[in-house]
Length: 454
Image (cartoon, rainbow, N blue to C red):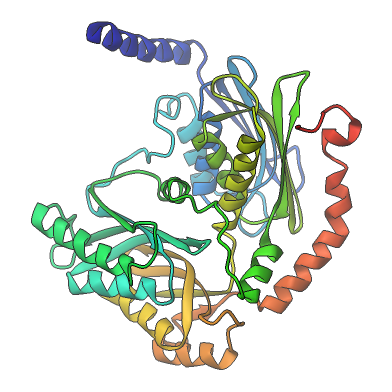
């Protein structure tokens, strides 16, 4: 039996190589057809997860996907993406265009690479994965422990959602600048970080800490997987917390799932405020839930986004029950909300040094701010960090508090990039008024082609 299984796995690998040789991926980048966007077309043999792989490549080079047309019925995958750079202009950077061609074209390995894994593993850092209950000052405490243990945080992604916090951090040894691989030291790091995450230990869900040397998993993909496994999509009742309830209702996306019985598809429609990497988040979630997107369309107009997917489970069936339908809706809502840019955006750019993250987050905590999302990166000796912060009590951040923090850190090093809550609410309500009716008319449900799930 074991010999037969091994042979079958090798056979699948050889078959994939044969299909790839006969039908190599094709990438066409067109900067002429459309006035304001770059059109990228990707054709290749089909396999589960290929859509996520393509979207991941485009988002990793910080492109904004304004429209997308997805078709992967049968054995062939054909997708078209309209993209711009972060400033809303066509993509003309030859280095970026060359990277896309090499990553997705016939000489790439994306058809045989595991989805969510970076193409080149790094041996220069150790990865840490953390998940537990969120609380004010948590990132400050975690950073302080790492600084005490002589660990330098090189890169990090921190998300919070629904009272839970998750982080993927890449650390190095303070003295050598290399990855940490000594078993006893890794065990000590894991033990102390777990104690920080446990807090008062009065909550039922266990805090988890994982230390993996030389891990190359895509950080954002891993955060989605961690929070999904932690069941952050389950709604938590916060009695008496009117600010939390109001904030949650304001940002909650409109997600629906209905069955198109004639074609054996489940149709997922999503309407929400647009933001970068939204397509990656929804496609990542459906892929991790073992659904295949056969057809789809994505459209963004100013501040609004509309997505429609025709899906089946990997076993070939549409959504089978009301419980399954609700779970898909809840998981997609959570995937969208995890990266919502709540609070004030602060950007830190300065020369990197040991303990920098600990010092900055301590100043935030001492001034009554809590970090709801963070992106930490080190580039050529420079720390380039982005923090989304809000008042720990839930109220809008006071301007005097921000000025006090900038004085402590450095006026030129810390920049304020966010908008006030009131401005965000005004823009959101205006966009819903202008575009809500437009998006509702796009769904096939309005043309009586799909029956509602019952």
